[in-house]
Image (cartoon, rainbow, N blue to C red):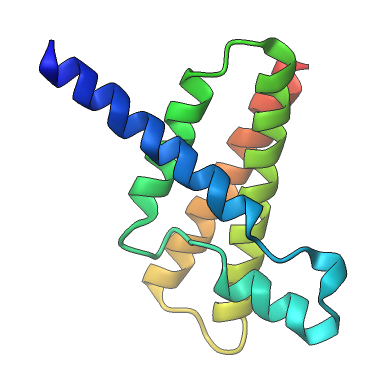
Length: 125
């Protein structure tokens, strides 16, 4: 019983902390030109990060806890946009020179994730 309550509490805290981080995020309208590009590169946790698994776990929990179909579609759209931001950030990071095999694998995985999220979104509509 205690373990179950602890897990529920931890999931709630994770979701709540994500909501707070989005509330304090800088709006793109407040930023100009190159600052937007810097924000895209710096504020996106990409698949090459060691903490990326945690981001995906939290997203899965959010999807699992979203029961309303309309809100689920909105969340899927948000996640598809997030995959696109990740892909753009990776492109900006790796686009200057020749890609290593590992960087190419990360880019391919990011593109595959984007395709999966868009397909899921289309099926949900």
